Structures are given as structure tokens and as C-alpha cells.
Amino acid sequence: DQQVKQNSPSLSVQEGRISILNCDYTNSMFDYFLWYKKYPAEGPTFLISISSIKDKNEDGRFTVFLNKSAKHLSLHIVPSQPGDSAVYFCAASVGGNTPLVFGKGTRLSVIA
Amino acid sequence: DTGVSQDPRHKITKRGQNVTFRCDPISEHNRLYWYRQTLGQGPEFLTYFQNEAQLEKSRLLSDRFSAERPKGSFSTLEIQRTEQGDSAMYLCASSGDSGNYEQYFGPGTRLTVT
Image (cartoon, rainbow over all chains, first blue to last red; front, side, top):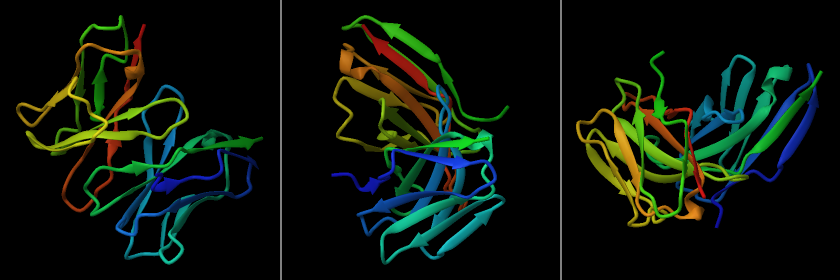
């Protein structure tokens, strides 16, 4: 049973527009959420996180929104750049400093 | 560069052989995690340490797998009697415990069992 789901395997966006990546979770005990970006043959790179006491967190072009009642979070990238093309993983944990549960990832392609 | 490092980056081995991977975490981080990633999947948790204590092992971790972190610094992951199903990317991550819980990943070790 997948506790973290990324239902869109891929997404294409024009350069300069907004990219929205979605993630759903089923375990109501999750209280800390992270987004990672991954290029081929490299480890995941941390992007942004949010704890369940917040509903929004921003860092530069990246904003994560958390809707606890819907068990849904999303990552917004504005404006999208060709260098953002990668696989994006959503991850969740219970308590923050514990093992992460990952989704299967969404491949983002930003077209110039 | 003070990021997480892993060695080797690639390992090709024959079925039945033993392999060992090493991870050096970010120096001030006391938590160290091992994950495994196969094609089309997200990373899956294997085991983790706080300092030298192994806190949890996933049920994915069969008894052919063993991990150590003897002095609370680097860690090793050993796979005995490798099988073709062990072929995967093995990822190591580390985190601190001062309120920032982000896990920072190394580049991974790609294992191919022939």
C-alpha cells in the first residue's frame, strides 16, 4: 500500500510559466514533508520542506502548500527554467527526524 | 566539499559474491540513513543510525544485509551472497537533530549483479 502518491508520472511546462507538482498521502501520522529533485545518476537534492503546523513555505522560486484535511501537498515553481527539468520526489515522515517515505516521482520537463 | 560521500559509485559483481559499500555523512550529522532505489520507484528505506546505534531496520532488509556505524561517523552496508534482485542504486543520507530535519543524500552506489 503506497502511503505517498504522486499520480502524475510526467509534466511538461513552458519556460517562464508555473510548474505545479502534486502529492497525496494516506498516513495521517505524517507531520513533516519534503520535496527533492533528482538528476540521472545523482542522489536526490533537497529543495524545500514543510511541517504540519504550517500550510505554506516559500524559498525563492519554490513554494510548498500543505492541505492537511485533504492529505495533499503541492510544489509550485515560478518561473520555471530549463534547469528545473528533473524528477521530483515528494517525501513524508512521522516526527521529522525519522525515515522518509517517498512517492514514485514526477518527471518535469521545462521547454524553452 | 562537505556533503555526503559514497564509495564506490559503481559496482558490478557476480551473483553469490559479497559486496560492501561505504558512506561518509556530513561531519556534524548524527543520523545516517540507507535507502535503495530501483527503476521507476522512489527511494525505499533500509535502515538508520543515531550515532553508532542502529535504530530501525526495514523488513526489506533481509538477513543477507548488514549495516554498521562503528564509531558514529562513516557507515558500511554489506550484502552477502548477492542476488540479481539486489541490483539497485543504494543511497545514503544524513541529518542533524537541531531542529532542521532535512536529509541530505550522497550520490549513491549503483550495484549491478550479473
